[in-house]
Length: 261
Image (cartoon, rainbow, N blue to C red; front, side, top):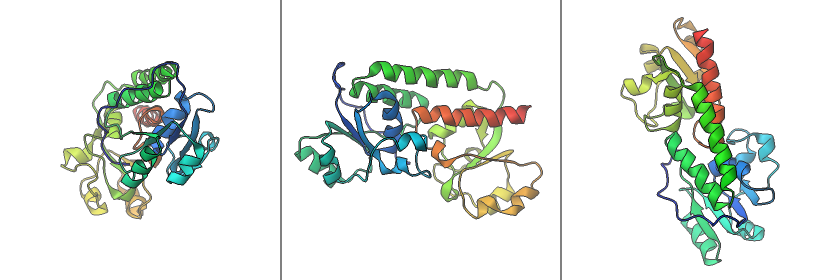
């Protein structure tokens, strides 16, 4: 899920068409669940049925069928379009295309602007541009409400696996937008660099956002750093754009306002 964005999307389905869609991409799942019309989204990825990996409300996700992504499963659903990711197996793509099923790729958005473009593209692809604009408006409104005017607090986001996000990650932009400056980037750490407990203790930030469950991330010695404030951030807020931006920004905004109060 840490792959970069895909290249420019091809022309979408003209307005008025309502193609049926199967999504194999958890980030596309969350967007299509909001912009597709009832019955249009035939299945979503199995990741979205897993509470640990879903980027949408788990109860909402489970109202849709899920697929493991095999050609046999997809063909049985008979979709017009399949939305995959950059990790989609070439053999799966080739098999679907040989059977006349259109396959498109949605990458991971590295910033809000790209995410909004993806929302509009998927909405247009599904023939529901108006629903896409409604989602874009909700994201824009949340971003406007959460903008922090003051200096950013030095913050480390400690992700699953003990890694940190880079400056080109969407979550880094959302942190900066809500008043959190990347302490790890300021210390030279880049995308997916590992941050050890020892390095954390030697040079602690103001705020530690813990999104993993590594042993080091719950070490009791962190509680002894009296100037360090630790907050939890759900891992499923880290990697997808679309409606996930709203949930991520709401959480970050809430933390920032508690600190300021």
